[in-house]
Picture 1 (cartoon, helix red, strand yellow):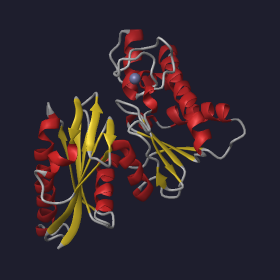
Picture 2 (cartoon, rainbow, N blue to C red):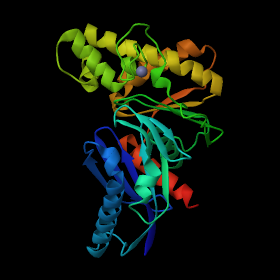
Picture 3 (cartoon, protein in one colour):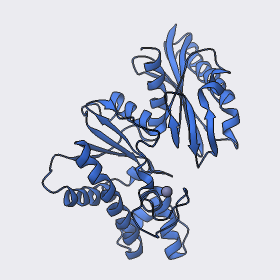
Picture 4 (cartoon, rainbow, N blue to C red):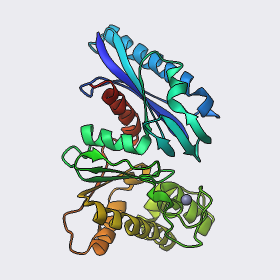
Length: 311
Ligand SMILES: [Zn+2]
């Protein structure tokens, strides 16, 4: 018999789940497309994840691939993007998933018979990076995943910073007045310039060629002027917002995650240079890639579930 928790990360396009033991061992994982109107189905999504992952882990055990014969699920953790009230367990607002004031905890608790933890995908992802990933040695960390959207989370002296429900929402700081339209309805937000989604979109609009951020990274690396311009504007905008946060908080490690981090040095070299320029004398700020990649959310969901039951 093994004890474990189930982490569920509901994203705009995919739902990622993980079955994790209190000592951090991942017994099973799964990825499914996000169904339309997922907000109404979160209870079924969580219940299905519990059944699917425990079945997989015990099947691997009976096939002799692991020691797991039976799994006892202690808790379920659910993380979502957007504005989240972690304590009340409410999804306040999500542009991508289309809900307002959704009772996330109640919806899931009605379908599973264990305690339910609810959190923000980026904040929970940072907790997972701190326990299992690239921030294990650091206590003053700013985590910025660059994906479809752009938000942040912060550790100060090893503790997650939570203020109001707006904590971490650096993506909607306006960096280009009257700039490109953002999903939030404003113009020129950081998210509309420097997220992975925005980089692909801006380059495609400028060139008439369909392509995503990975394509832009490849072309920038090859020296194509339009790709370099879009890329550098994104890096400069990111540095312009991140530098004052780092200065105010005494951050020592900027951890960059999400799809854009896969660009490697094409991203990290100009970003380190742009931050150095803006941070003046501070030479102690490291800029590194997150380690857990797109598993940070599901492992983070498992982390808050373990915390909830004191494991
Ligand atoms: Zn915005």
